Length: 111
Image (cartoon, rainbow, N blue to C red; front, side):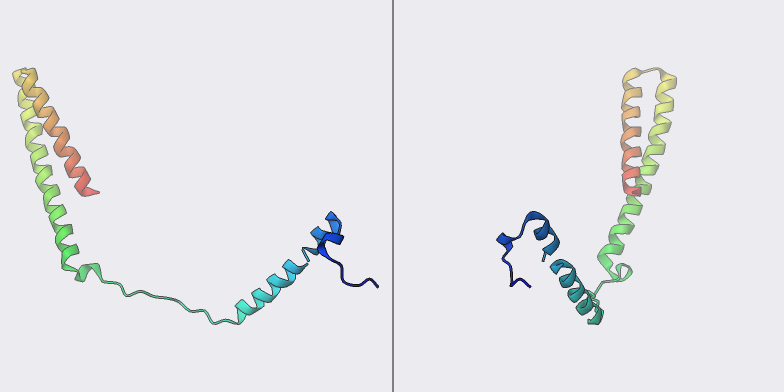
């Protein structure tokens, strides 16, 4: 029986209730509209990495460098063993540092 009421005329509870069901109605309206739209997919042209020379060269150079570091690591491990037999602490420390360096480098190139 009452005419249209203004937001300010509604008490807190009525405002919460009114919130207007309008949100429900709006959601239903939008959802139905979304269902009617066809699904489209945006695709971007991709470059196959195997066909990209730069990618292939980079991977191969990383692999080659890793094997180089593995070889140097192995030779420095041999020098470390010799230094331990010789008992020279300076030579042992240098060899140990180089083993650590080349081990880290080959591991980084593996990742």
